[in-house]
Image (tube, rainbow, N blue to C red; front, side, top):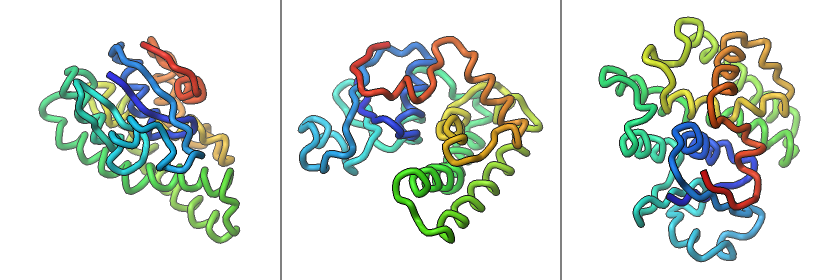
Length: 205
């Protein structure tokens, strides 16, 4: 397998963390997103339907969009897919992540670190992020992971950007259940922080 991803891309990190934690052999190829899309490596441009990372090449086929890739990998490797009775809940969490925490936290991070948006924009994004974090924290008050069976792709998706909360001046300690949950991920064999896992070097696992 070949994974195209980039530094600071939590969406890429979702897939990279799956591959690392599951021990799935793969090659990670860093893509410089500061380069205009037409000037990026030709193989990546050809594979990336939307011109974005991540893209996974598996048996010659390209897979795009992080949560869709996670679903493919879970089925392909029979790993982190939960119990059969949890499939609907996993799909719901992946859909929630796309529209909620996968929107609010990365957009707040981008606006604060790189885009330098007006205060009212930052306030709106922060309000959304805090609301989403409260929802997630409350859900994690009931189970160790998001689903009773244990770690699934729902956790990998929802957690990806939260290892960077300090960059947007949000204290994870204010969300004790999230802090506990992220701590569980940190001590798993083969886990890597996104700053390490997504660095611009060619690596194999």
